[in-house]
Length: 457
Ligand SMILES: NC(=O)c1ccc[n+]([C@@H]2O[C@H](COP(=O)([O-])OP(=O)(O)OC[C@H]3O[C@@H](n4cnc5c(N)ncnc54)[C@H](O)[C@@H]3O)[C@@H](O)[C@H]2O)c1
Image (cartoon, rainbow, N blue to C red; front, side, top):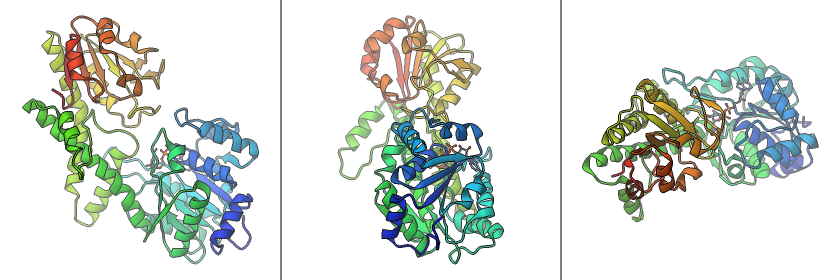
C-alpha cells in the first residue's frame, strides 16, 4: 500500500511507484483478459496480486504456469514475474484487495439464455472488494458492461459495504478491454486504451497507470458510461457489418453472384470497409455485446432494431451452412443422413483454443440430428473430446473416406488446403462446403467436388 494513498499522486510519482515496485495492483479474475493484464502490470514493476475464485487457475499461476495455451508470449511473462515475486495469485479477493492501491476487475459478463446480461460476477467481485477497499485507492472495471452500469451498479455496491464515498475516498474508472484473443499480449502493448472516470482524478490516475505499464496511448472520454459505449459501438459496428455481408451472401447465392468477388471489388472504393460472410459469429464478445445495449435501449424505450436484426442474421448462419451441406450432397446423389462428414474447425475463430459460442457447435449438432456421421479436425484441439467426438490427430485422418468436407473455421492450415490432395482422400464423389472463403471454388470444382460456399458461386 502506498502511504497517503494513490489518488493524490502525480504522473511522475506514479511512474516511479510502478518502476520501484511500490504500488500493489489487485487484478480480480485471471482469465483471458485478467492474466495478461496482471502479467504486464507485474512486468512493468508493480506488485500484482491476482485474485480468482477458480482454485486450479490460482495454483497454476502460483506454480509459474500459464493456463492459456494460445496466447503467445504470455507463458514467459507469467513464469518470469512469478519467479521475480511480482505476480502472486489467491482465491481470497478481499484479502488481496486489503493490500491493494489499484483494483482491476476482469470477471466474466455473459448473457443468459434469455439474452439478458448476467452481471453476477461483477456484483460478487464488487461486494468482496468493498469489504477491504482502502481509502485513496482506485477501482478500474475492464469487464464489458452496458453504458451506465458502472455509475448505477458498481459505484453503489462499492460504497455500500465499504462505507466509503466514491470521488471523495476512492476513485472509479472504466477501461474496457479491446484486445484480440490469441494476440492479447501484442494488443495490450499496442492498442490505445479508452478510459472514462467518475471524476477527472480517477481518469487521470487510471490513464497514467496504463500509459506507464503498457506503453500505449490513452483516449480519455468523459465518463465510464461513454467508455463502455465506445467498447460496445466498435463491436456492434463489426457485428452489424458482418450481418450485412451475410445478408448479401444469402441473396447473391440465389442470384448466382459471387459475394466475395463483389466485396473485393467494392473494397477498391475509398470509403468501403470490407466485411465477409461466413458461418456466423462466435467468441465471448460479438455474439453477446449487442444485448448489453439492447437491454439499456429497452429501459429508455429506444430499441436498437438494426443491432437486434444483425444478431438474428448472424445467429442463423450455421443453419445456412447445414443447408449448403445438404445441397452439395444432393448434387452427388447423397443425403446428410448416413453420410460421413468431416467438419474442419471447432474454435470460434482462427488460432484460438476457445469454443465460446462457436458457430461450429450448431453445425455439428444439426448434422448429427440429421443422421450424419461426423469426424472433426481442428489444429488447436487435436485428440480432445469436442461436441461428443474425439478430434482427429491430423486433417488426413478426419477426411479419409468422407462424403463431405465442411470448413467452418478459417485456421491457417485450412487456407493452404491442397484441394487435389483433399479430393484424393475423400470418398468419390464428394462434396466440399466452405463457410469461410478459404478455398477457390473453381479449384474445388475442377477437382471433382460438388462445391458450395457461403456467398460463393
Ligand atoms: N476474452 C476476450 O476476448 C475479451 C475481450 C474484451 C473484453 N472481454 C471482457 O472481459 C471480461 C472478462 O472476460 P474473460 O474472457 O477474461 O473471461 P474468462 O472467463 O476468461 O475469465 C474470467 C475469470 O474470472 C474468474 N471469476 C469469475 N467470477 C469471479 C469473482 N467473483 N471473483 C474473482 N474471479 C472471478 C473466473 O474464474 C475466470 O478465471 C468479460 O466482461 C468479457 O466480456 C473479453
